[in-house]
Length: 73
Image (cartoon, rainbow, N blue to C red):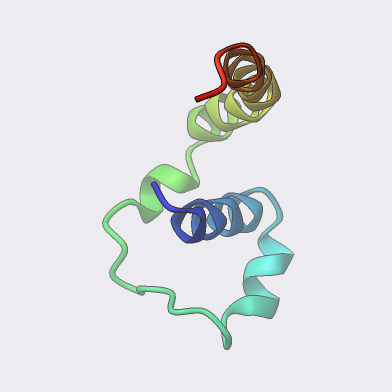
């Protein structure tokens, strides 16, 4: 996954968490009105898993950093 794709995913996650950002960025982003996953993004269970994933990301990044620091190629 490229850094641009990751940036787009982070932007979408921020919009899911804070809907006011989605209202501000609607004119600048390409939001598909026929999003097949729109009903899933409003699901409370999805938001719960999203917060768990956001808590786990720093741990995952730390593991990768330690590995690459140890085994520099």
